[in-house]
Image 1: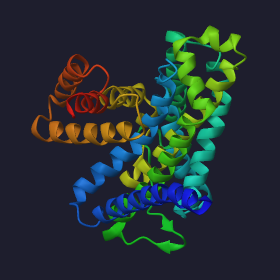
Image 2: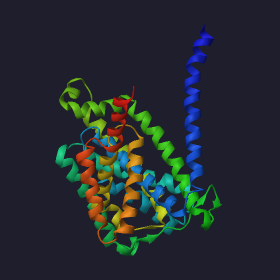
Image 3: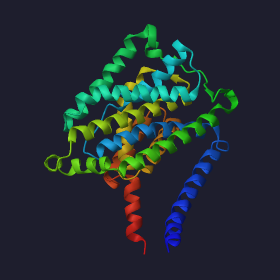
Image 4: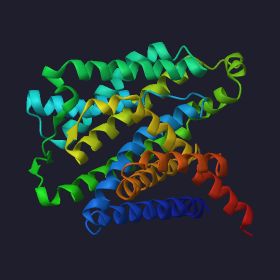
Length: 325
C-alpha cells in the first residue's frame, strides 16, 4: 500500500516535470528556426516580461510601481560598466552582477517606498527612476550621456559567441533565465509571503491585526521585483547590444505597467505573453505607421481596457472555463 501511494504521488509530478522540460526544449529549439528579426523581438519581449513580472507582484498587493525602469536600467548599465571598466565578458558573470546591482538598489530604495501606499508609492518609484535617468544623462564621461554605450558580445561559459549565431544564443540564454525566474515566482506565489501580499490588497489593517508585517512583506517583494527587472535589463542589453539612459526614463516604466494591463495579474505566463505581444504590436505599428505608431499603441490600450479590464489572458481563460462543459 505504501509503495502504491508513493508511486501514485510521484507519477503526476514526474509527468508534469517531463511536460515542462519538453516545453522548454521546444522553446529553445525555436530560436534556431525563427527568422532573425522575430527572434530579436521575442527575446526583447521576454526580457521586458521579467520586469513586468515584478510589476505584477506589486500590483497583487494593490501597489503600482512606475519605477521598474530604475532596475531595468541598473541591470543593463551593470553590464556596460563591467565590460567597459573591468573587461568582464562572461554572460553568467554579467547576469549575476546585474541581478546583484538590482537587488542592492531595491534594498536601498525599498526602505523608503515600502512605507507608502497608493499614489505616493507610485510617484516615489517614478521619482527614483528619474533620478537615475538624470545621473546617466549628466555623467556623460562615464555613461556616454544620451548616446549611451555599446555592449560587446559576451562569452558563454568561457566560449566565444559567433556573431552570426548571437541572436539565437542570446534567445536561448533568455529562455533559460526566464524558466528559472518562472520557477522562483511560482514558488513565491505559493508561499505564505505570496498569499500575504494578496491579503494586503484586500485588507491591510486586518493583516496587521493578525500579526503580519505589512511593511516587511512589501519590502521583500519590492526587492524581488527589482532583481527580476535587473535580470531583464541584462538580457535586453545582450539582445540589443547597446544601452542608453532611456531605459530609466518614465516611458519605459510606463510600458511595463501597460503590459501588465494586457496580461493581467493571475499566473506567471500572462506577463511574458503580454510583453511579447506588446513588442510584436509595436514592431508592426512602427513598420506600417512609423509616424503614428504611438497612436496605434494607445488605441490598442483603450480597446484592451474596455474589452478586457482584467487583462487579455485572464479574461480569455475565464471565458474558456465558463464555456467549457
